[in-house]
Length: 126
Image (cartoon, rainbow, N blue to C red):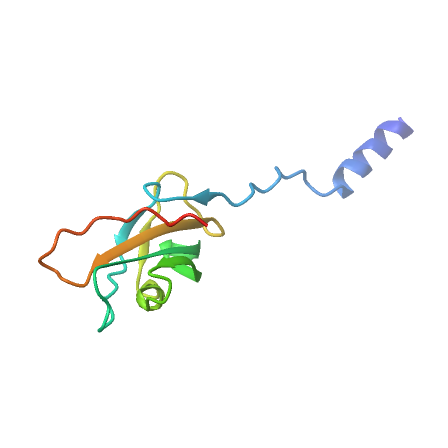
């Protein structure tokens, strides 16, 4: 009887067991869907194709925070900065399990001549 009371007392006092929190996941190009895509502008003076790879963290309600430029081409382009400015208005479509705290990396590109064919460039080696 005493052991039953002790077991009951310990069960009442013990904090409930919770499943471990899932670790944040990382998403890449093609795995995120935009509700409101950042539309960067090509800075004046840029020529040809400009491109930047940006990493961000997912905030609540599909918002985006903590973005940084990982790499860009040409190396001295200001296009990455333009993307970062647009990310404050961007929203992700929370599909496929995307949740706050997850991170993602995307590559955006544009052409200085809007009438020219514009394709993503391969990243230079190095």
